[in-house]
Image (cartoon, rainbow, N blue to C red; front, side):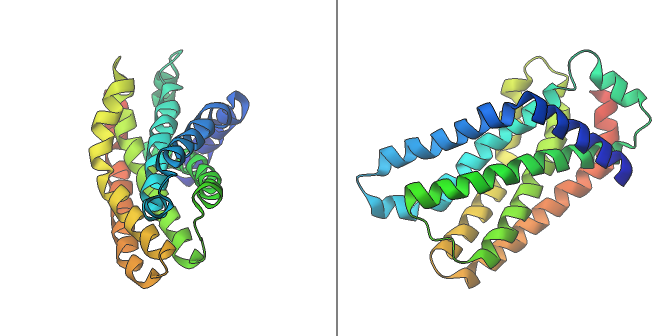
Length: 222
């Protein structure tokens, strides 16, 4: 399973490295979202500082939708999905590979956006001990849930509009918990953020387990 996951993740990451969609489209979109919020709230720096965690994770969430759509759009052309089903790869390994590829892209994007909020919003990332595991848990949860719902919508013609409708309500706990954990860390009270980190870990474990159990069926139906 792990070998198959490494093969799928390597394939997806090589496609992204060659196409540069994440670099040329997703990253500029995420930075533009941060800049627009900065321009809109710049007259009141106090409000901007208070809402920095929420704006950061909203930008990550929107960019994550683009990354998930891209990850499954490449499988829906030229019979790639059929070839994947006939390849003999472990469906659980395919799921983990998809999750890993999306997570790597999101982590790189989160580092970039983190620099953005430091420069544009004046955020103080001093509580690294809480910020880093929060990013890791939230990214895994987002990538796992996105992969489950991405394969559900991949075979449909309206997947570009259906995926956000399916995925955004499910990711509400991630947005709330990650924002609350970041708010505690950036506000100088990291002790209050650890319980929110626990919620992120539970969500990530739940959707990872769900994907491992159901991805094979979803792949065949898709």
